[in-house]
Length: 82
Image (cartoon, rainbow, N blue to C red; front, side, top):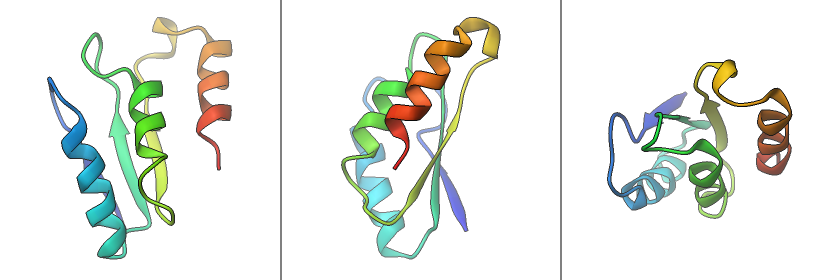
């Protein structure tokens, strides 16, 4: 079972770190995070989340591929891969 965290516009993503840890404790297999134009940059959010839970998979929902070059998306995916 997966869970979606950090919905909508946010000024601070620190709550998402705690949500990821709590999700791991209750046995979730994945945490889904979406990108939002000019408010949540997916690489930085996924980088922060990758430091918290150990056993939970991270799933990224990115903006339309036309807003980021495919090489940039591939680089972010490689960095977030465990």
